Image 1 (cartoon, rainbow, N blue to C red):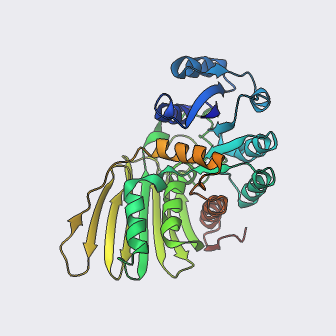
Image 2: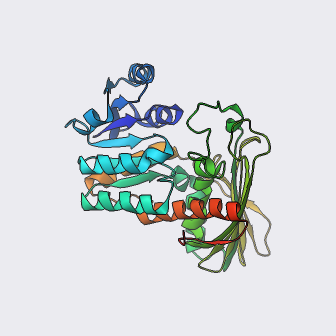
Image 3: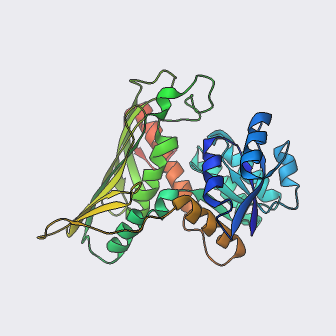
Length: 327
């Protein structure tokens, strides 16, 4: 059983704990830390954990095997490096870091200390994503031409000015860091690396100083193209669609719906078994810590997602295409 400390006790740490606590034979949360005492007490009472009063005492606790980092984005790189140097395996929520350079440095520290680094891109584990990947590898799509994706929700409309997400450092490009990185990861998982980005970001509706309307055009190394939209002031929307010479797929990974349009045939609904993506990724993290498997989101892939995010923000700021990895 992998014994984990939950670090940063907002709503997402609670979601991760609920996915595994008392439900998994591989991983559990045994202790927790947040800068806010009330959050520590509430989390510990709800999930039956002990409490630490600092991140440093977590890292010196011999009964902690790994950390689950749900801290502000700007702290990820530092917290990852500190954990790896202390001998702890690391599961860090997306985005991995806010810059490609800091991500590469943090991943290097994990590798140098032989610690597993897992980034929480849970949409990879969705049944729809896995089925599209399988069909793609089987050649069902022919030549892949284009992928389009959207991840939007209205939560930023409720942000308070003093909330850590309510600024342009923690939420670059509006919803890119909080939502868009899920779709960047899914798109690159299917089509490979992005080479060039052109993006626009606008603030139209939210009250805090972040953008809420972001869209981008991608060019992939394979020659395929892509579009990503992420809007922080509209009803929840999550989809990705893949177009090829042999078939088109329309996927809603949040509901595990997949519609397949094959050339010359009527559209078909593909029957999928829903997957608890949070439990799946955390149990795979536990398996990776034993050395039995590799965590499916490789560090280099997580770094590339950050580089794409960074290029999107730079493109919007400069009003011009940006070559990914050139910043």
